[in-house]
Amino acid sequence: MTTPAADTETIGARRFHLGDTAFRISLHVAGAIVVIVLLSILVIMFTGGKLAFDTFGLGFIWGTEWNPVTKIYGALPAITGTIVTAALALLIAWPIGFGIAFFLTEICPDRLRAALGVAIELLAAVPSIVYGMWGFFVLAPFMSEYVQPWLTSTFLWIPAIGDSFFWFTAPPIGVGLLTASLILAIMILPFIAATTRDVLRSTPQLLKDGAYAMGATRWEALTGAVIPAVRGSLFGAVFLGLGRALGETMAVVFVIGNAIRMPDSVMAPSATIASVVANSFPEAEPGTLDLAVLLGLGFILFVVSFGVLAVARLLLRQERMS
Image (cartoon, rainbow, N blue to C red):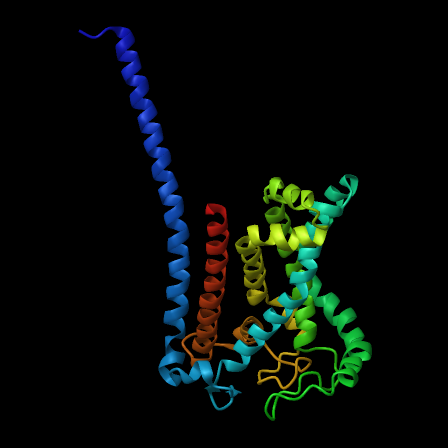
């Protein structure tokens, strides 16, 4: 025969197990919602763009002609603009972001470290349309008047790629791939700097102390001890910035020139997948080939961005497990 105290303990244990089970189920539901949303976006983009792939086949990806009048669409100019602007933005933002992170973790005085860190992170809070307006009204005129003429006159000796890509030879109109890349570099800089700073902070202090004890300079300790220890995480930070740059829309629309053609220079007007969709979507009617083409472009961008972010998470995870 059980006592009242035993019955109370049994009821308490049952309530605990019920609460624990409900909490576990809610966590599974939350995780399932994320997966369902991602899969639904992927399916909607694919089914909506299926007409474009059925009409043009793989030629939709490799085609270079974009003519809404004759209903001929090729995604390669937009894909090329997306990749080039993101790559140039990384080339600009990665060394600057790494330098900022190293300065904040190793050199910056303690009384300035917190303030500078907050100031850099605030760059991520600026709306993208503000970056775009600043780029159009300030950066683009500066590029057309000073930077682009100087680049053309200084690097005219660089040989062209084939007969179509002439690097820095283009009319100095201000807008184009290079201007868009500079805007993207500013936008992804706080992401790269903040993530790299956290990675450098996680480096075991014993590695640094051991390097300094053996007479290494600050640069030798960085390249010989710190970077090899957190190399995977550093690449993960870069890929996170790349994923941000690939999908940026409004800032790029202002400064890239929105010319849907294969670029013949890094200063030439071009377009990205996001800018093409943003500019053309209001005119695309439901059920038409025009809308299917835009949804097909969105599907391509989703796959590329998802792959980049998946690689970034994999690198960060491997670094934490090592």
